[in-house]
Image 1 (tube, helix red, strand yellow):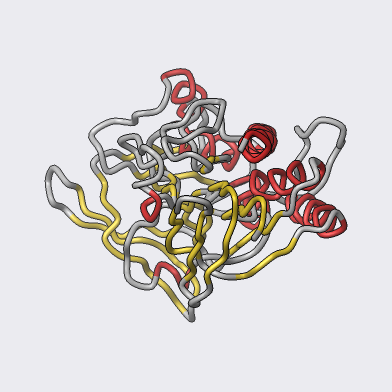
Image 2: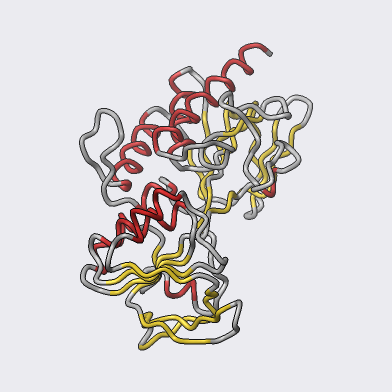
Length: 304
């Protein structure tokens, strides 16, 4: 039986394992894809204290190496259920494994919301992107479209406007929902065009690469094709918390409704990272959550 089982190998999950191990506890980290989470999409991280510059992958590799040297165990499996029992917590996986722990930390992270169009998944990395910082340089001097109208979409577009020949904003609502100041900054740029009430209906391709999008005006129902070299999708994030909704309260957006203490309504179960309801989702806040949740788990074990 492990002292702490961490579900998720992003910054929060790996930090949780590190703090548990440093407190003399055993730790297992179960990750379904690859270690590092969303930060691995960032080629340059310059806002992490004590580190002038690093890539997200470098951070992930260093932290994984650090926890392995501290004695962490890892498993590449998909957790489907966390089941508290009287004297233990069972963690079940899609692959058929069952792991036993004294505590569990849910650091399940988030995933990008997709448009739901045919061929979309196949075009990720071949014309469809989610991160202007990561992929903006690939479209220098080219035309890109940005799907979305909130703060994230506006911020992405501002970054892209510095590199791209033209940035076309496609918002399916009648207005942009992001902050007025961001809109002012973005739409003051001569190479930015904003279109509202525009729904992307299909993706245009040639030889497996994106060449544009077909759109429909939701007010007039007129259709047109918009040529672009790349499409940045910024329509929100989806927390992957549904399998654990009986363990921790979810807010209306699907995030764990837990405060800075990272506690849940279930004794011995804690949450950490982007999956938690919070105002700021950054690398620093994720690792802070990991530390907080791990220390809470250690206290829980020591008091039993």
